[in-house]
Length: 259
Image 1 (cartoon, rainbow, N blue to C red):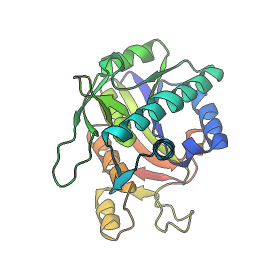
Image 2 (cartoon, rainbow, N blue to C red):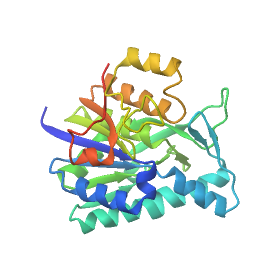
Image 3 (cartoon, rainbow, N blue to C red):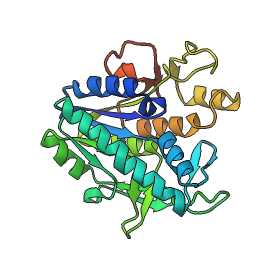
């Protein structure tokens, strides 16, 4: 393996908290190995949708994206949030480039077929062009991906940011030893949501099934962990769910995933 690569995804209250976001971006910019940042921003998109009079619907932790709500998603993710993050990384002398999946045709997705639920304009990633991403990294450019992809036929799609991080990490594992970090406001996966210190430090597939059956892992944490295990199955070296401070001090208490 030629190089190490860090792929970090931020979301949750980190995006909404000015101090937490500033601290994370400062720490992230100091990482010396090649790195990629993926960000969500669902709460900000929900706020904008409400201002525009558009209802937000969630099913099993996933956003249903109508054509009307897609506008607020793209405006928030690809516009204000993405460019703000890029500008702040530049301030830390981290040469960043903000991207959707449509830029350089780097991530293609397929509109999710209607089965039991119609998720609307939601995309499932079908292809990641790791050569384009590597070309950016070779030029010491840090790609910053938002949660917007496209179908190759002119349609933008809302895509789960956890999934984008997992798919990118998996594809880049052909060229790098990849560590995938899911960073948010909590210390990791909690056994008791009311006890912020009840971190489950190790979760394998068997433990995941137990926690899911017990209802401890539910809602938005379900797709997050599914993406973690998919990344590991695609040869991503390590996967962690942790507080955003983990990016600076990886000895802090957190959740590590394994098969």
